[in-house]
Image (cartoon, rainbow, N blue to C red):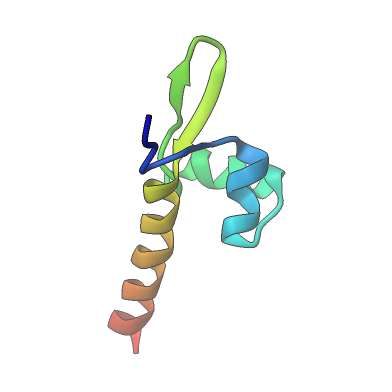
Amino acid sequence: MNITDPLLKDREAAPVLGISVPTFWRRVADGTIPKPVKLGNLSRWPLSEILAVIDRAKAARKNAA
């Protein structure tokens, strides 16, 4: 099986964004980070969605300048 978009735990996704896990969850609550994919009781985020958060922040920075 070839996994092209791995699912990340909160503690794996937060360092990609350079933030703590509690801040990660605050950003989920305020909508900056998408809600998780739920697999039973597990919460996971596709890596592509985490990278899209970074891309949106970069685009917002360009538009603000």
